[in-house]
Image 1 (tube, one colour):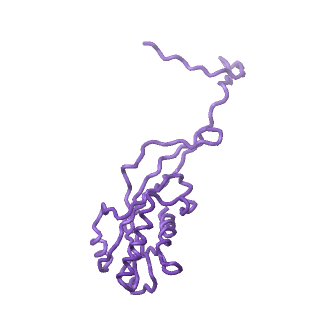
Image 2 (tube, one colour):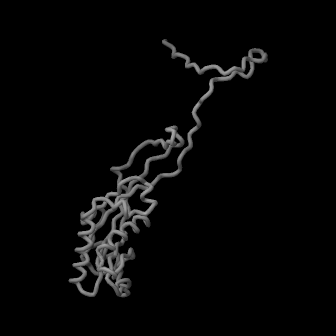
Image 3 (cartoon, rainbow, N blue to C red):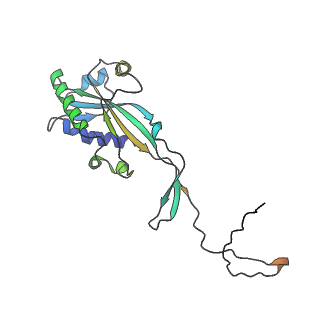
Length: 207
């Protein structure tokens, strides 16, 4: 599911790039990567994946067929926060600031990933995907991230997408009972009445 979110972000952020130039990538912005860059680039580096435990649900839910009959039961999805470090890369700091500003304006216009930009796998989830930008990270500081990457600190945006991950497997349910009980043999081995009889529920004891 992560690569589908990557693709949705790529489609959204391309609108912030200068027309006909640049790209959106998801590589680690290390010194070696920066030295190889030769075009305006928005780098959306996925640096953290954590479950959004506040959204966790208990119990199973039913999947129904067109006739309303329960076909199977499935555990509810688990929601995860995907945190991206978004940076702009050009030959001049001023141009990087313009590109980062354009990316910020593009993202602020959406509280959810736009449904028309979602790949089929995300559309099939049938759930809105919250999108947050420039919110202080909950897990670690930005300086620590740059230190781990071995690069120099740059202006960046923290972008968070909350997405459900389906939990497998699904459990098929038994078909509904449509016939009454049938007596196969009678008392002392004598053939019994094989006619279907309506189901009866024995009343509970009043003791």
